[in-house]
Image (cartoon, rainbow, N blue to C red; front, side, top):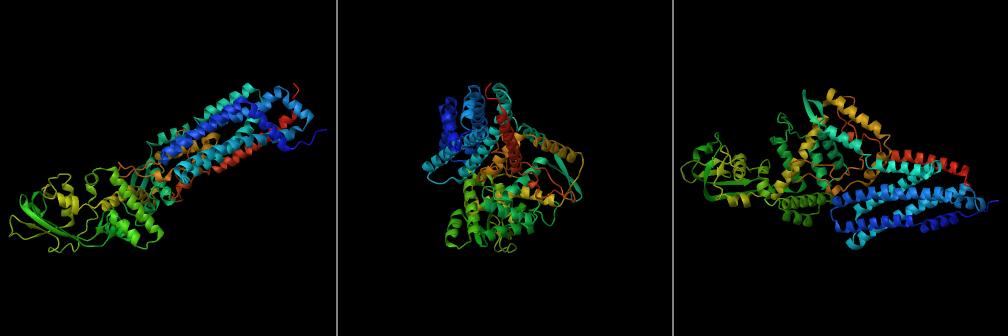
Length: 585
């Protein structure tokens, strides 16, 4: 009769056996050393996106090499090696049932793996906490995701390795494991090929009775930006959401043929300046500026009344209607005003962006001189006593009304010469340009507008256009359908999706390229070997692109459920095989 041996005794016996095995000590030590190196790097690397690039490789190498081999070795050690040396036969015949032995050894394997993972998890987070002395919530998020993902993956692997170890010899099971290991690093290749193929693809939209081609990548970028902004998974998230919503609600377009909602018509410009006024970045406050030092007109527009004064010395005076507050004024304003939390966050983010963009560009004013444009409003613009140019060389000549276009031309031609624009002597107006008309916050506001208008314009187009189902659309759908079908059988990739889906990215580092007028890359933090959740464009009944098409994908946790069922079957088949196994031969 079998003795009633407690389960903890079996677990204790398994742990003792493992500790005595040199290979387990080596792999466990290697894993913890690897984790310690990552922990140290988390202290040194202050940039979360930079750390994530290294952590992704830690994720891959630790799971698909160290833990993978450890799971394989555990299964082979107890159910091949211990079977061959008759240890299992002695235990079974003298002390307890096979079913109980199998169950508790499986539990001991899981506990061992979890203990390793937990130590690594605590090692990384506590090392970072001790040296940095503050909680790193980004680090906690990705390491917690790693902990759960690695644990679940190891449970699935052990179930599978138990099955092949009991049905095949050690050589065959090792070959199968090696093939799986090799395929783990190429499992994401189909997605890479898909994305490369889509670089040359476009979709035809019928917009305002005109067929317009737009690249597939541009459509994805537009929807991805919407997803990140709406979910506040982007740098300066509150400010970005406010700008995005305003542009979409007003349906601003960059189409020059759009009369009502064109981004640069007078009505839209007024709405835009009102937006910044409402945020507290701009105040409707008069500023009188005068150029008293006579300066010569170098050139003027051929249709301008100022052309006749070319070569003459002039003076000018004007009154600006709006004042863009300086960074210091905004910081003081936050302290002295009782703004709600959201408005304070928006202004703070605007201040941070302004400081960042200035620091990134040594010649900030020179580089963005062309953005001195739409937000130049003259107060009482038709009043020649407030806004005028006076001829000093010919004092008997009547003053000429100075308009906002004249002022913009004077400013821009200071940096870029044009024969057809109003240009004054550079050295004579240097103070006017560099001091009186240098508004850093205005330029940063215009930079932000240019960042977003490209993509919000696309969303407006998608909302008001229909997809032409021609050969372009058919090719896109065919390639996506082929990929989606094959992906269902790519068990490694669809499991890997859970890591990026739940762990996420460093969202505070997702932002527009500073060297670009309006370009954002959402794949800069992606790892070539780790799959990402991806979606296929979805159409509504009117063939319009669904404005929430970014939700058109299978949630990755369904793949976990599916593989959990497979692991459950593997476990019970292996257990049934073990109960019938001849342990004497």
